[in-house]
Length: 276
Ligand SMILES: [Zn+2]
Image 1: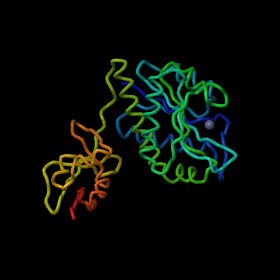
Image 2: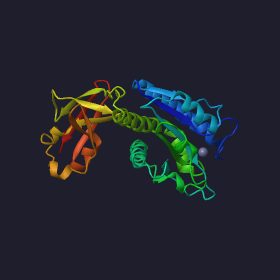
Image 3: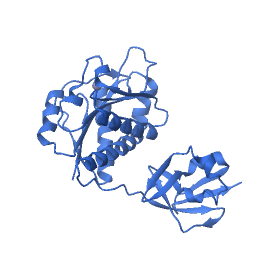
């Protein structure tokens, strides 16, 4: 099975940036551990790079173990003198269009999961102060470096510390999708497909046989229910859809803008939709 290598930046005696009583090294290890746990729960083969390794050692450690179809991500937090500066960014080796597209996929997945985290976009590694990034260039498998936000910005720091689970979900979503993509490029078996928990749907007091799914904790319903909910599909084209087993779903909460009230019955794992 293809593997995902995940590295928390710094370590090996280098704490990285420091702010608000914490360090980049500490925060990145915590996010990394939560992401590894999330990926394992989804059946992905993920390898955590040991924290005692320096950057050069990290690169050789991965290269010694990497096989065709594997991917590698290193996570960091930014720091800046102006504490108002915030947002997440992601870096790829300049000129590699495939990697640029993979990097967009990773950043988009993170931003979708961590609401309130601003985007600073994807960037070629040549735009960094050091001119190029070893992690993006010297690893034999596709590799990307992400900055998950500014440790020096209180809002970003609070997101990293209080919404770690959202970071883990967003990073896991992106890594899983990237790993599937890379496995297909290499003609290998992709990691196991995402399995979303199934939920029941009750509309205006009536249960339906067709079921919904929970996507990262969000009750999602098939778009075929638009008719029952009195929603004009032409007016709902802006809604983000998730395609799963050949069915298109939208988040139930996104239907509130169409006058649908949305409740969640947790004991019965049922989303209750009521039209006005
Ligand atoms: Zn760093």
